[in-house]
Amino acid sequence: MAKTIAVHSFRRGVGKTSLAANLSTQLALNGKRVALVDVDFHAPCAYQFFGLRDEDITLSLNSFLEGEHDILAVAQDLTARISLQGGGKLFLVSASPKPSDVTRSLRDGLDMTGYADAMAMLERELSLDFMVYDCSAGLNEDTLLTTAMTDDILLMLRPEQQNYQGTAVMVELARKLEIQSIHLVVNDVPESINAQELRQKVEETYGCDQVYVFPHADEFMSLSNGQLFVLSFPEHMITEKIQALAKRL
Ligand SMILES: Nc1ncnc2c1ncn2[C@@H]1O[C@H](COP(=O)(O)OP(=O)(O)OP(=O)(O)O)[C@@H](O)[C@H]1O
Ligand SMILES: [Mg+2]
Image (cartoon, rainbow, N blue to C red):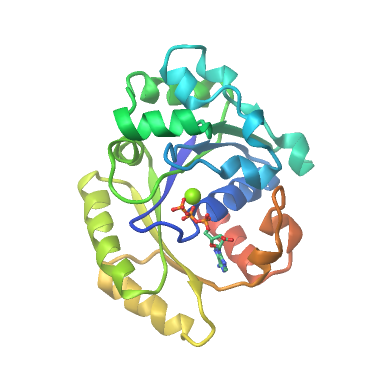
C-alpha cells in the first residue's frame, strides 16, 4: 500500500507546491516510487518545477474526469528529468493548466465521480510507495475529497496572525476526518524569529507534535523553471529538513 500525503494550507502562497515537488523528488531520490498529484484545479503549476510547459500537459486529471481516457494515460514519467539512480521513480499526474479548463472548473465545479477509484488504480498499476497531493488552498470540495482519503496531511503556514487562525480550522477538520498524522510546516520563517520558540508555540497551540520550521531562503528566488531546490542546493538547511521529513513519512 502506498502512503498518501496531502500538502495543504488555509492561505495561498505559503509554499505548498514548492514543498510537494521537492518532497516528491527527495522520496524518489531515496529509491521510492512516487506520484506527485497536482489537484490544484484553480492554479496547477507543479509541472513547472520539472521544466514542463503548459502545452506538455495534454492529458490531465480534468480530461480523465470528463471521461476522455484512462487515468494511467495522465501519469507522466519524470524520472529521466531528475536523473534518478537507484530504483526510484517519479510520476506526475496534473490538473489542466489550460485557461479554459481552469475557468470551467471554477465556474461549474468538477464531477469527481471515479476520482478515488482512479487514484487507487494508479497506486496499484504503478506500484507506488508514495502519493503526494498538491492541493489548492482553503476549503473547497475537491480538496476535502482529497484530504479525506489521505493518510497524512502536511499543513503549511507562514508565521503570520491570519495564518494561525485559519490553520486552527484546518487542524480541526483534519482531526474530524480522522487523518492518521498531521504535520505542521511553518514556512518562510525570517531569521529574526527564534525557530525553537516558534516550534514550541505551534506545538502547544495546535496540540500537534510534528512541527517543522523552515527558514526563509533567498535561494528560492534564484531558481528558474525546471530547477528543484533539493537538487540545486543539496547542502542547504532546507534540503536537510526535507530529507528528514521524507524519512519520517
Ligand atoms: N522557505 C522559503 N523561503 C523563501 N521563499 C519561499 C520559501 N518557500 C516557498 N517560497 C516561495 O514562495 C512562493 C510561493 O510558493 P508556492 O507556489 O510553492 O506556494 P503555494 O502554497 O503552492 O501557492 P498557491 O496557494 O498559490 O498554490 C514561491 O515564489 C516560492 O519560491
Ligand atoms: Mg501551489
